[in-house]
Length: 333
Image 1 (tube, helix red, strand yellow):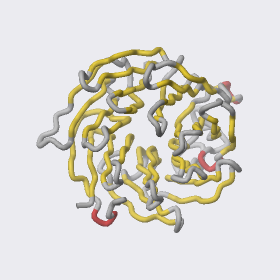
Image 2: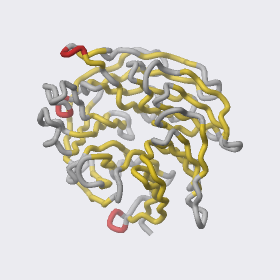
Image 3: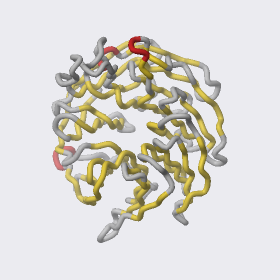
Image 4: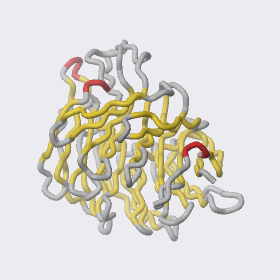
């Protein structure tokens, strides 16, 4: 499998578009991207064209926070509590599902592309059949409210294991639950306390800094990333990556970001050559590469923007990022 030459990595295509672009899905073997934005729209763009022109698709009524592409079927999620199935050829909605009772924060597509998971501030994770858009299973286990000040809890990130057998989800308190996707049984549960100050900020608001999850290629470990919360003012922490033996709930490795910001995107190279974490807010906007085998940082690449969405091609030699006002393709020519 090809890989990136990190010393030569650069943005080879750039598309400027106002707004915060929060998620991205890529069509296989192409530079065609579908991404969701804070202007309530879904956009399509082909970065392989000489002058890429984004095409807007309208259907959601709030921020578009999740996107998953299964063949010609695009599924998007929004803070309007709905999932929309789109026909990518006609570029129009096929079905709209009232999926959750509160904001939907993220989607995850199973490796076989037959199911998509959604997580919401209603504290449920749901599995949906991609072909029919029917609900397959609802998963609940996180506490709906936090005891002090009776503040509502939230679900922030989700990820399927490489074999599709397990779904991991984390909440505001940085508790991680791993479920068996086929049965809905709980397989593991533990806390990641480095991401949460055991206090409240100055607005009497709990703040957990765990923002993204990814299983390692062998499925034996779960990588967590976000912001280390070191004080109640949420100003002293930096980007942090932790690797857990998820079946035992045991921390096996910790790595620090050099950019000082909060990681919001993660990707593990299929052969374990590198782990990529993108900074989405707070410090320098960088793409940070780590070597999990050698337990060290490999490279910090200026990202030119906060990164909220990330996609990688089949051969792992091209990256696609979306964020604040920009859509970019990265390569090492």
